[in-house]
Amino acid sequence: MSDAVDAIIDQWTQERPELAPGLWPVELLARIQRMNRILDKHLKAFAAERDLEVGEVDILFTLRRSGPPYALTAGALIPAAMVTSGAITNRIDRMEAKGLVERVRDGQDRRTVRIRLTERSIALTESLFEDHLRQYAELLAPLDPATCATVAEALRTLLEAGGDTSIT
Amino acid sequence: MSDAVDAIIDQWTQERPELAPGLWPVELLARIQRMNRILDKHLKAFAAERDLEVGEVDILFTLRRSGPPYALTAGALIPAAMVTSGAITNRIDRMEAKGLVERVRDGQDRRTVRIRLTERSIALTESLFEDHLRQYAELLAPLDPATCATVAEALRTLLEAGGDTSIT
DNA sequence: CGAGAATATCTCAACGTTGAGACACTTGAC
DNA sequence: GTCAAGTGTCTCAACGTTGAGATATTCTCG
Image 1 (cartoon, rainbow over the protein chains, first blue to last red):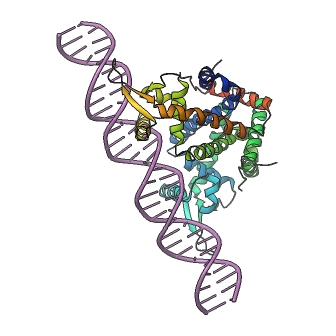
Image 2: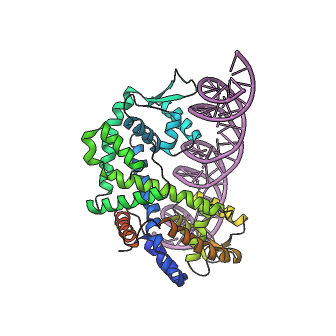
Image 3: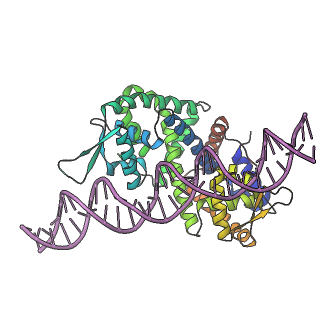
């Protein structure tokens, strides 16, 4: 079996044989990138089937799992969604227009804006997340559970070393 | 040890306990996404230090590893870079302006354009790739080689199942 | 040989993100 | 109480990508 990354490594081995011993990280990291592409494609299709954007689904899930009253400040959504402030403003604008969230100005601190799920989107998000989990499980179907656990653990190690910080 | 993905899973477990058994794919796939972010950040910094864009480095490497005469058609670069035709045209425009590549019209088929490394960029790419490998190795330093091999193998399985096709 | 299908690249408007700066509001020190 | 520093959100221009369509060239067959 040989995939696109193997082909890349073969080419480099051909062209720079003396570097071959240093190519092993490519096996892992290039596949992370490619796997991410595939994942992205699936997520995009998943969202599009429901007239949503990937980023919008992300916001819905983030708000839903934060628990009642399903509201977070714009500032809290920035690290959760891993985008910049401008992007959050845009997304919320769009989602508000669609009736997926509403902006609620805080009485205590009038600078902050709470982004809250609407009644409609709370219901929507329930089934959305269940479908999402089903899609995720399908993507991992080719792997046995033990391998999945090993990979997940290895990635956790890398994330911690790489400075990926917990949010909450 | 607990990372951002653990926090997400904990939240969902709290909010939808009945879905907890279906959350395990998130452990792996969400970490793929986050790892990809970190990787992207490193690559961006790596490129920026050298007055390049990530996409430009990608093209340089693709052309270099294709072997002499270090030239590929625009069409061949599209699947290799995993972008659309418009993006390739733009990148090549920019790289041509920087003197990193040159467009050579084919004598046989005047529709095709060969993108070729310049003498200067061939030399540049040699050390660039060596530095790149060093950076990759550093990123994987927290993992022992056996684990890396396991993860790489698992990802290969997923990529094949996900329809990631070899290029070359 | 000629017409239509196929192929390769480029064009361009629409889109989402970035990131610096603006703006409004709050906090802390004096 | 006042002022400066700090904080939270929004604004906006620049940027790169997408993806459909335009253009030019080659191939295929009648």
